[in-house]
Length: 432
Image (cartoon, rainbow, N blue to C red; front, side, top):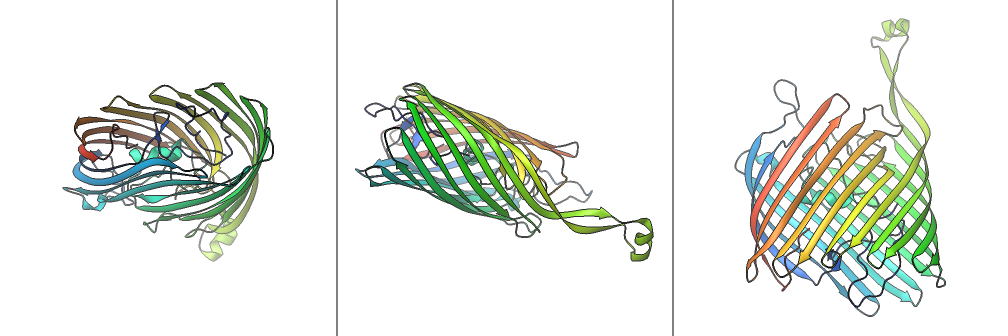
């Protein structure tokens, strides 16, 4: 599957044609439909959280969800794009360190790095190297929206059920060969690692190889076909998954500022896991227990699809995404069918104000290794920065998350943050 469309059609920049969902790209270093000059900032904010959940039970044997807690954060960030004759670097980095007046177990750090380097090896050959990595100690907040709208980031944790420290990295290399004005090929691979601090949650390792061919029907229309192979394995749990994916897609430019892409296909998911099998009563009476654990192999077909609409205005951008794919789960769920949808809007205008808002829905169901109920969740939030004077900016943000697992468990989380940031550069601060 692919990722969000890159910013295009800026002033003085020729239209490069519609994006292709199966090719690696990033929205790093861009806001409001425009590439950013490099900008650095530091920030201090006060935070109010409600509904944080550790991986533990209270004295009544229930999930120990917290009420209102108050704290503070200090952070640093950098974002921007730099281009040379044959190279381009795009960067987003945001890190913060958090402490609470009570419940120190939730204090910690959240870090997100999204870095892409593009290099033209020859006139018709381009190399793209993409690195995403970080640390998350909360299951939601402003750093959780990137993987929700970009199903290509299979190694970035999403839909985490607990507020637990998680370390992750995903590295990708992609080679694009423009054989002719109409025909192009792409080949690449990814590797990822996810490590969760709690020993009760499952870790994940995996890799992927992929390739596609694209043919431009006209200046604004492209058709393509892709194949990828993925492998997931789960330290702390028995089993693995092998996934073969085939897709066909169509991209169209509905104007110099609007792109629409859609693709569809099927995945063959082969899983190995453990299941609990009931014993015959006579056998159970002899051995002293009623069930046994045995290996279970499954081979299932899962439909795939993604659609994306991107609209760029003069100083803002609107993105609508929806997708159905296979993911390595969230530390409780293993290999899963994943359904996602999101809407995002960002605005960078004038000399003072920036605004961003995102809303999304996700749903997960086990894809052969487990017999868990369906997970469904909603996430939404928005933030604003306003230049007070010189390089000082006011920051405000609100985030909300809700999820439910069948009829077993549900959760609501809220977060409010207000603070001040000091930023370099003449443009308004855009930190998301």
